[in-house]
Length: 201
Image 1: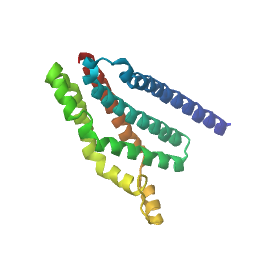
Image 2 (image 1 turned 120 degrees about the vertical axis):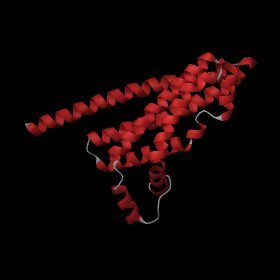
Image 3 (image 1 turned 45 degrees about the vertical axis):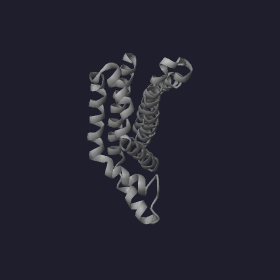
Image 4 (image 1 turned 135 degrees about the vertical axis):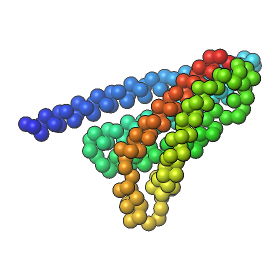
C-alpha cells in the first residue's frame, strides 16, 4: 500500500511539473510567434531600423525556448529517477548553456547599442547591461566546465569510450539543472529588457 501511495505521489508530482513547464513554453511560443511576424508588420522604410533589434530579440528567445525544453526533460527525468535520460538531458542543457555563454558579448551587439544610444539615450541600456553582466558572472564561473562537456560528451565526442563513460558519471545533472535554470531566468530578464527598449524606439 505504501509503495502504491509513493507511486501516486511521484506521478502527480510529474504531472504538475509537466503542466508548469508547458505553461511557460506555451507563453514563450506566443512571444516568438509575435516576434517572428516583424518583417510583415514593419514594412515601411522608416521602420527598417527596427528589424535588427527584433531579430536579436527573436534569436535570444529561440535559444531560451531550447533551454527551457531541455530543463523540462532534465527535471522530469530526475522525478522519474531515469538516470540515463537525466544524464543525457544534462549534457544537452550544458551544451545550450555553453552556446549562450559563448554568445554573451553579442547578446545586444555594437550596432544595436549604438542605435539605442542615438535614438533613446544610454539610460535605455541600463537594464540590458545589468542582465548581461549577471550572465557574464555565470559565464565566468561555468563556461570552462560546460565547454569541456560540449567538446567531450555531446557536441563532439572523445574517441575513448571508457574515458567518455567515466566523465559522464561525473556530470552532476542536478547542479547543471540549477545553473541552466539561472541562465534561463536571466535570459528572460534580457528578453523583457529588450522588449521595453523596443517600445521606446
